[in-house]
Image 1 (spheres, helix red, strand yellow):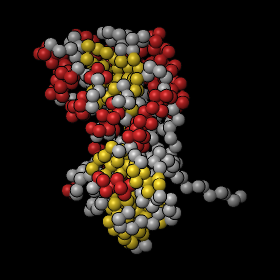
Image 2 (image 1 turned 120 degrees about the horizontal axis):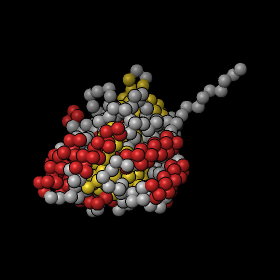
Image 3 (image 1 turned 180 degrees about the vertical axis):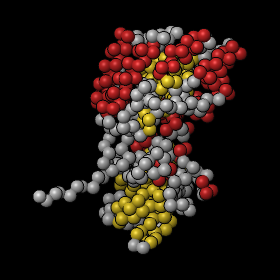
Image 4 (image 1 turned 90 degrees about the vertical axis):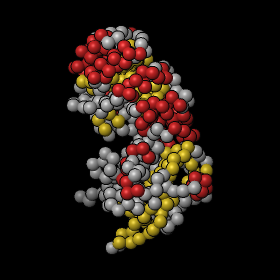
Length: 414
């Protein structure tokens, strides 16, 4: 019996960006004109219209009353945060510096929350002074916040970040379940809640974040359902009614060949069911989902310029002025076990045949500096623009930009 050859998996079309006359458009601007306006490569460019479209589409799909928070660690560029603050209900920060950016963006302090396993005393004081919600992740934080309240007389708003006894299946990074540096183990939370009451802190609710970058809606549904059920049990030990319930996020975007965009229909239906149940069992609680990558990841590109085209023992390399020091994720060195290519194009040769099998590398003196490995692209020459899609999240600030002391990049919101 003759077997049919399996088709090679391909990237989902990057149809969020249009092209015109062979050039990629970002914010309606042809790529070469944008590069000239910026004055250099490499750069990240984020399309504000795509950010708005994603937030609005998500709003339309979710049940009314579900609050949407932006996890700004995904992309803390101030202009992006300022734009996102107009589109979402709140901002989640992971450092005092991010807190300052969120406050500068005009976000309501009552809708800013602060998570992270190693909050320093000065950071806690800053957060209390700002009047934001602090997600407690250890007994130490309770004691320090109690001391800050005693010393200042300021109210201290807190929620408990819970390390659940389950994981988000098929997530890119598991941030709950088993031993974790994040949050407080679920079985220890009743004792923590008692200590929060003793210290006179203003308890508001729970934060449960099981994992990230998931493209399986059934896994997200299961994690949200289990998170809600766990919150109901823990609420029995709370010093006051739950007013804030952050069920996390985990919504993924397609990076690699064969992956498809997440269908959120069943997720929205599940949130509606949770919302109805919460109205009876946790009537004071506002339900929040916290998303970063899903809101901004597909709206950004990374652009670098080809500086050399060279052949080594029959294989062609496009050497660019960008690389892993600017885009660690695309190089495969940010969580990938087996390296796979991000979607890439030659931004000034759109529509030309992709019949040139090449590897795209950067200028760094390390074999890890690889942006695309043996990928079929249009024939490119020095001066052409390599574009890495899906680069709106965990790009510039997640990369070792000082590595080997090459020139830095620029970020723009278009």
